[in-house]
Length: 230
Image 1 (cartoon, helix red, strand yellow):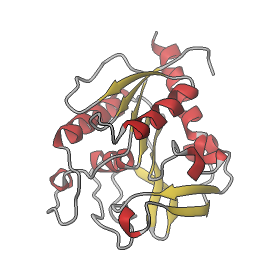
Image 2: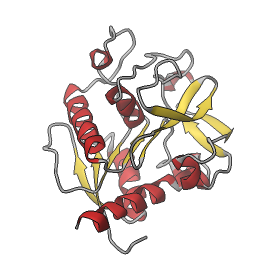
Image 3: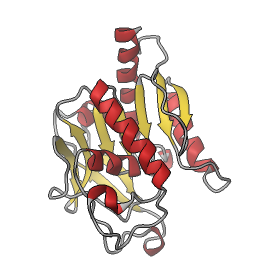
Image 4: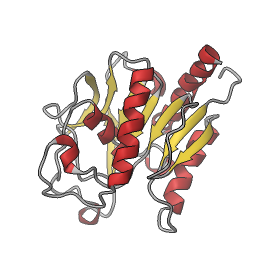
């Protein structure tokens, strides 16, 4: 670390008692890695003085955002779509570090003109008791994810029913982990540090130690933004 605590904008779903524990996991992971947080909920104004963006998990994205008819979307929040798509586009344009997690991974794919598989059979949480574990996930050597995690095979969790495939991958994105034909991680090749993971590293009991290191790498890269611009 540089000694500077970078300001990270963390996007979350609308506050509720049901989401309180989930939101806390994101806050704890980022603050534990050394970030000062600016928490954003749907409808909040987008700050201009942040050093990195973390887009968290949540409900499905409005299918019209990627030019598709809704056949299987759930928990759509169009205000949240608007916030996260706008902040992701702005951060990419400014070359700020971005970490997209689960829904945030899918937002980045949509922002890069990709699309989504709206429903993967057997992947709805109620169909699989909320979680599928993926052990031994291989990460593309030399990628930002490999550097963040040390390059060892990862154990990660799967909590999504929508997905990205090689065929639906957005422009400029490079797949860095693939499991059973589904892209589980990617990065934006022409930007400093834009990484998306389909799994939930903030759920620390469900992933390997190496997978959790993504937060440290992200916050360290955001700290470089502060030293470059302030």
